[in-house]
Image (tube, rainbow, N blue to C red; front, side):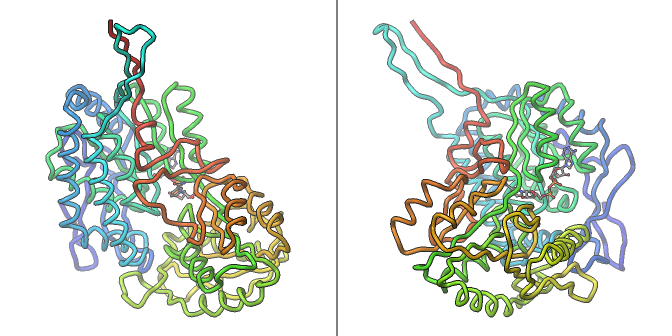
Length: 486
Ligand code: NAD
């Protein structure tokens, strides 16, 4: 179905429940708009009710009975089919993502390609071992472990990686025999619907995957209250994550929370400064700084501070800010009006706190939610801009006089997701690996960007301490059974 808007057709996307595209019985919809051009409506999605959530869970619970009994390789075959369909539609889905949340088309295509690769990785998982033979002290007995699926998994995702995050949760959930109800972020529900279209076209059995769009509070609480939910995997803010964690704990179901970051990069006195500048810019400002692994605190040794600062300022000044659909754009808009407001408010807060705004942080005139990349210096660890996740293109420079001070400062955060160091000294590398309280330690590499076959997740307030991606995903999406046969 579509409606006419701005002299062009705007498609209305339904919920996907039990293998059918259905509109919400509420009759209510919301418009997904383009942050680079807010008057452009990208698509119309359903504002669903508790009833639709319950219908999706009932369908997923019914489907689990046969899906969980299907052989692993057969489940993998379905994922392979989905990957091929996604690959065929990659350009269109990437463009939809750029229109919905502003990421440049180049980055969006990279993310969509990542989605294809994740599906293929987990298609292969369907053929890999899921248990161990354990020597029994009884020589006539056989003891081993096998893994059982959990049942229906609720998947709640943010807007910043609208293809990769849903897929890196859905693919392992399905291949290990679970069924899924996906609730994507409102801002990127059209992209989510287009992903689910790929699953639909691959003809997964009815009810194996379901999509319900709408308000986080309404849909989220209904998901957590549903009697069929057996696990919830969430990526998003700490406030919402903790709310979900509390409900899951009360219900006694498994939960996985991937939340915020305040990621440091250390630039040691022996660093390759050009490399460090390039990685700080890529890690901190790509996707307009809207990555949980984005570089935010830049801790630089005093002996190279001035040189690093000058290079960082001059390279950052070259960044082209604009519509992500234009090939000349390096950095797109903030993903929403509220995201832009948050960034601008932190620019104010930083200055009020006494940090020096070296450049950027200005609202770009025009319709879209554009801001220029900001660099602060004289940032002290007690300042809000040094402690709170801004989720925007803001870098905070801090000067130190020793490696010990640098590591202490880097660890002085409630978050513990990713940390980078730039150094050519092996001892500094080893100290950094050993001392950093983070889930992702990166040496001479930007803080953002982990390969899909490696575990991903954080320490401290960044995560509920489970890991996503790679083989690590099996720990969350299955339960171990220990078998003794005599
Ligand atoms: P958010 O917490 O506002 O929303 C995330 C999801 O939760 C959305 O689908 C939203 O609709 C839903 N939601 C909102 N209220 C809810 C409720 N009461 N119950 C259940 N669900 C509810 O986060 P966001 O703004 O979409 O994303 C930005 C945040 O995500 C940042 O904090 C970022 O660091 C984090 N993030 C973390 C990772 C990671 O892997 N650690 C990756 C990407 C983003």
